[in-house]
Image (cartoon, rainbow, N blue to C red):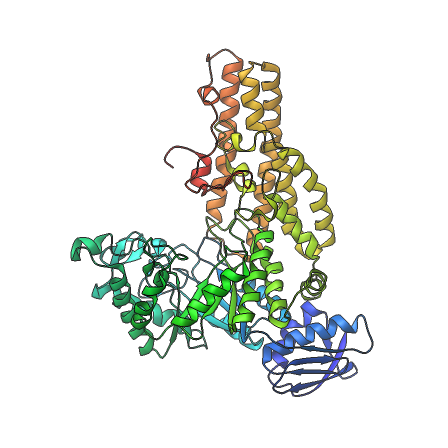
Length: 622
């Protein structure tokens, strides 16, 4: 569509140019005239004007204008932003490091949605020239790469904020020999050690330098073993509250030296105010002591787990006692396994953001973690980002409205993406999968001879469920051509799971009956399945390399290779038994037990969480 923009254009022209191809528009003198006006107040979009306050409001307004011009000749829309800041945190520390182009793709989608903040979560995936092993072979960003996507975001009105760790979650950074003198445990820095703060000064300076913003997220979450390793050997037992305060004071001195405004995840201070060390059962009487000790930092309340609006209200009110302007971080549940958990993400997000509006929270963002190898492609986060965006501009969000906005902001069908929820919300799992069962992960990776999860799924029509998904996802693939790689991957995943999910059960049953004919059928199926799994690996690889750097993919290659080699061994063992070379198969002699993970759940709500890959594939030490 040809558009002739007039009015106050200076701060948005570069952004319009960036979005031209995605929005299929052309700036032309002979195009439809749209006046651009910059003034305080709500976002107003008519068929002749876009009236906006902040730069990022304009790009949402442009998307709304295009949406409604395709429907009506005349229209008048008004949206009142509910939050000053609404955005996302992208995890690039769990093996999948987005390329600069991959980040730019997300920034363009977010700009049209009307989001205005992005954190790129980098534990060790940013280059620190003085520390060459920091992020070594992990796909770390150079300073030039960060400057490039920060500039790109700026043109779209999006603030990019460095998001690092300065206490815990540093296992990959601290595994090299250079860090021996600065680590307390394998993933926590040694508090009180001068060399720790020498290192942190380098990290903070380097991490913040390429960004325009003066804000920085310095982490500090989940340091549960703080002071329990080398620190205790050097200093004896000390209260974790005192250790945490000592460390945070020192880190804040460094941020102040560089003129930065830090924020931290709030959980450690709530854990320290808890007699059991938990995030959500803190002692109100201890909070005042906590408040007096906290230096000048913003608190980020992260919570992905609750569906109760009143619970969020209570936690937010408590956070405001510690910090008048806390941020809220919700979760898009991209880390459930190999597919997203949209049902839980949507239900919890609705509750959380409604509470944020009631309590008057000014800044919110969505986390997109990639736990245990980032098996779920980042593109699956788009529906959750759209939900955050619509709550940012509306008090209430109807599903029909969300579907319309998702299509006009991304070009994709929301219901096609929501099909992916069915990979984990299968027979035997409660509605909305609120306990985050992830059968698509554990059924893919588990061993066909050992079958650690076979007893969990026994009696449920799991194969039929995945068989029914194949055609639905194939149609979605054809309907969303620019996401063909993503849907091709999930179509092949459904094909593999409908064969692999119950093959271990079939093998065990046939073996127990000494039914050699059925064992031979299973052998034929294993041959077919090996071909299917290799196709799945290649489809997954295509999605990965479309947005990610190569580093980290080797882990998934190894996982897929593990399935294939174990299936070859399974064939070898079964043929030995069929040929009479061995009298029994010890793997199939074992009585199958339910998978007994450390987390216990009520009955009839979940088939079990698959834990991490190493706990899925073997009961031995990996």
